[in-house]
Length: 294
Image (cartoon, rainbow, N blue to C red):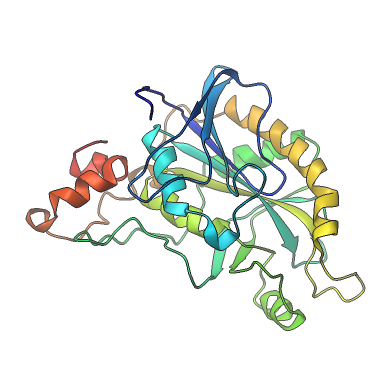
């Protein structure tokens, strides 16, 4: 990390259309090396209203990475290495419900995984851990984000299921109809791996799903296209930046949610059989419970 000791309490991962945050003071750009390879881009760290914030463009600046090419483990490890406790993930999504319209924000509370080719755990190589994902979104951070989004001018839906598909192609109409029959709310291509890894890293995680279009189930609308998505990204991105500013000012003083102690009883490998090299590799992720570079 270029020899710097840098800490941040709030992490922000920006999705399609959100590639930076204005108003940061004392900005530093960090190229962080992780045991899992490089993150999507350099992390930008600065102070926002007295709170240190770390920002990462999920697809890289210039939008260079497909959803399946994103190094999710490196991204979350990098955030954890900076001391991030709260992680707000902004994501462009398609709507699966009539009542969830383009430009609405959904603070989802559940996920359904339809991906196939992604690494989504820090564990293995001698350490077995099973964290609880019954409630994958932080129950304390989610209402803070919802309130901030409303104040930023968005119509907000609290709760809902995010279907995470592989992509990069959009859904077929048959797939879209099936997801609707499941009662899902929105569909995207990125956020469930982040939620899983954030929970393993004991980071409070919230997805702010920003609707750009109706998915193709809606036959009285034109099928979703990149042109349609891009047209609405700018409005959502400006609102998202305002949400970040408001959330930074309202972070809980203490973390007494289940996220903060997710690893407490999750590691089932006998301590005397855990390879020291794996502990060193995971560093800040397991430092609180296994010692080492926490």
